[in-house]
Image (cartoon, rainbow, N blue to C red; front, top):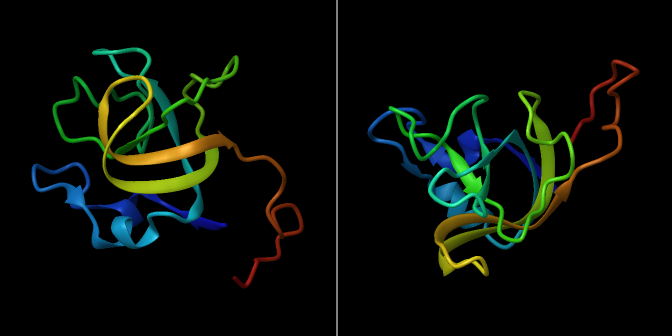
Length: 129
């Protein structure tokens, strides 16, 4: 599993030029871990997304927001909060219609909350990966 950031998936984040990166396509099909903030879309609350910024809604933000759809993801109690979560799942890039009926271009499929400590998190040692 590879830990990635929204900067791996998007170019020019937060600007009118924001677009999917070439790396998003390269990472498609891989199991990844991504940190962000859970948001239910206003247009359809069944559309759960992981956004790159806290307190923003991709539907109504003034500037483009980096986010990935989470088809089939059912957030647990307390996950919709101002605190970031780490999700792991299979990254999928390209047009598809989610089981909930909406179209997507970037998804974290079979997403689940990442648990466990990363090597060196408490010891101060860094993982040389």
